[in-house]
Length: 333
Image (cartoon, rainbow, N blue to C red; front, side, top):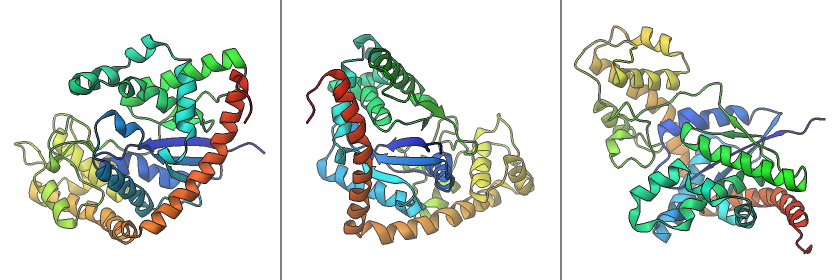
């Protein structure tokens, strides 16, 4: 019997989980958990968050909130392995080993390192440079076959593949060399205030982003304020990025194609159209928000799920590290 393919994905507990995250990623994860051919591993990667200064109490709060939001979306801890990264110490252990098989030139060439160094010039720490090596450890620790990635993480995945291949060339077949995974469905949702940029969970403009746990009034207000154009007709065009973005949201929330969304809305004026989009988003997010409010107050339950997920993750990670340590010459524990 062929082994299940491992799919790994991690999200930093920074900012908020957005409608864009749900449409572009989480909705696909909900389909993947129905598959008998894959084992999905989802981590809240709190260790990655330390590359910028964090308020400790706020980081803990957001980590638990993100975990609760995963559960509220319908991710099943019996079908997926769900855990908090810092609860599995093998991530840090493998990161150190991989550091010794990564060249300084490789790490310093990473586009994200250059961008974040410029953005946080007062705190250019080693964690910024080491970020993609820790990401490689996250992936390689579980013999991951497929990694869902956006364009901004493609360079990091290539580094993980290079490190895995380099290690395997020296020590034999130790790591699975991962491939990028691009879902067959899942649209890209853009900022409501700048429809030429992707909706970001760290956007400082609260009107640009719909949070997964926004209340109905906030959702309607943000969509009402969404940037459109001086025209008054609803149709698909790259010259109308604001309208195209709202059509994308409408289509995704109703499970229809962009073309069908255009047909459904073409006779609407902008006010009526925005109301229809807001209604569609509310229909999707209101049940999630209600489940979230039930779950987030039950810290004991969240920690139970996180603890059990970490134990399952650790059992895989331990086997990987045992093989890695033997290969590099460490005395067995």
